[in-house]
Length: 88
Image 1: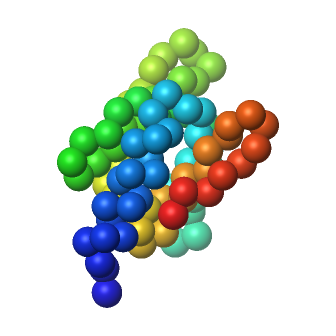
Image 2: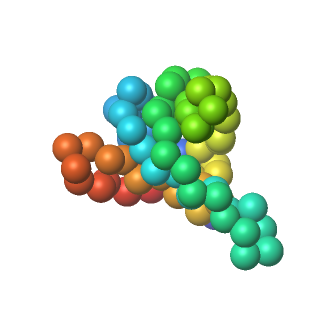
């Protein structure tokens, strides 16, 4: 069962990563997953925003909910000082 304290802890962990480079793995179902690197841009009460840049000099912002992280639909790994820290 989802505990409100777990969601609050995930939100707190992601808030400390604002401006940090992250590797994000999003499961899209049926053995499909997207792995991209981006920057945590901002956090809001129920979502957080990750900014991705691609080879064509375009920027894309994608929002995910904290519930996605809790249910493992989205996995977030922070790349800080050449170390990898998993947020969960």
